[in-house]
Length: 315
Image 1: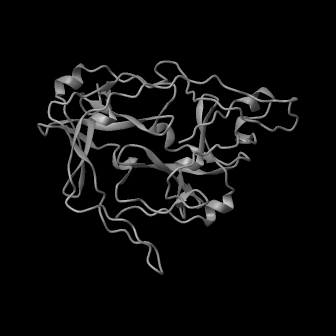
Image 2: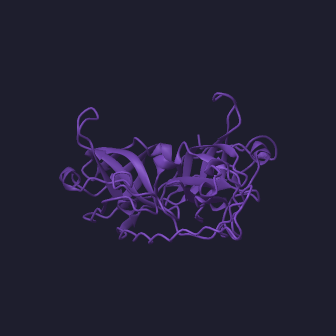
Image 3: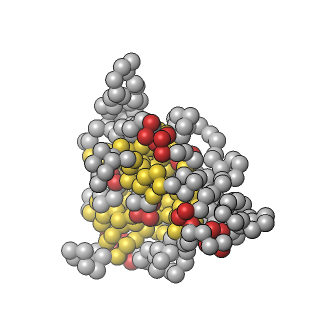
């Protein structure tokens, strides 16, 4: 995922940031292997991809089959890689729960029949002893991403107006945990579009590997200024370069390795009726910070999203 700093220049010249027109720099999207179409949309969920709403609220187990807590949030780096799962542990009826962030590489995503199962090699005592995860809000910090100059046209732009943010330090990647690959019983199915009619996907998602016995579980103590919580992504609007709202992010699609593939945006409709889900490939999305909040920008007009294919989930 390519991040650009959409600076608060509009505020400096008296134009509300939500209405500022933004011109993205050349090369704002990363080139690379993709299954997005030319317009930047992804049509279906692949067999080895997960929607984050399938992870949120799901129980995490240890190797002794004990339930350790449930997933409350997911931490992503500014590059779109999963850093940690934030797990609520302890407490009673939601009271006294402590959030502990477990490094994503230390979590095994497995299948129990047709049910997704999250497993870590840790005891309840280890999670009880782990430091509580601290968000940026709790640390009185604001998000920041590595900066690139972004021109902000206004009604009366100052001569040569160009705003640049100071680059944030790159968060250190957690040490990977050794895993023992588990071969799936059958190879992952790929979606094939029939000659006529909608695409039909019948295979369940296929994941992943069990952690090695006695492998250490890494804990993440705090959110970095270059990291996003998935709860900070879901519900946020996506803007185009003219500052128009194209829709709100309803979900996030990620690969088996935790890398964000796309954001799912609800388009059109009225009062929730007739909304169409469209998946915008992450490599086509520009992400920055304005007014201390994440800003998601896609270079398209509303007509392009209305014409885009509806995103198809696995059954």
